Image 1 (cartoon, rainbow, N blue to C red):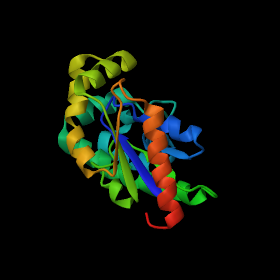
Image 2: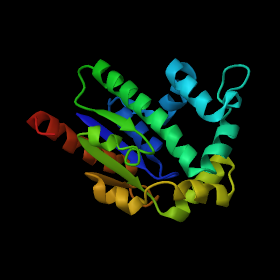
Image 3: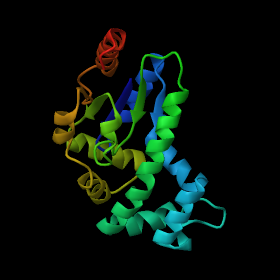
Amino acid sequence: MKVGLTGGIGSGKTSVAKVFETFGIPVYYADDRAKSLMVSDPALVEGIKKLFGAEAYKADGFLNRTYIAEKAFGDDNLLKKLEALVHPAVLEDGNKWHERQKNVPYTIKEAALLFESGNYRAMDKVITVFAPLEMRIQRVMERDQSTREAVEARAAKQMPEEEKARLSDFVITNDGASSLIMQVWDIHEKLLALNASGTP
């Protein structure tokens, strides 16, 4: 089975993914792979250069993240064009990765924009990690040394948490009050049962 794992910025989806890994479940980190593909996939590199110009890459071949972020997050049309290049490449890469996993009941694909990209349709089940907005903002401000305005702007570009939860098969609440490990274990057991029954 293919299981998608998503959540808004600062929700703690990576922490949840790490718990699944401790249970022996392989995790594909889509956002990390996207960053890698943006410098290693020749077709993607060429597309990004056409979109943003040669300044999109530094002299050492690394992505000029600050330049791209300033351009893309200030222009919705440009951001959509960038996503239209990156999302299909990540989807194909993720599918190849999934096929390489052997002798596991299911795999996890951790992706911030699972719903926004439409990639959730390729999943058998979807888990959303939910956390209150104020808590998410504080987490990201501390993690990235970002301003409140920058975090709020990024959060505003994502689908509302409530909508993600409504579209998901499972919801994990990461508000510090409920045990993450117990919630993940409960979902893990349910996914094992589904896999054993052969009805994803």
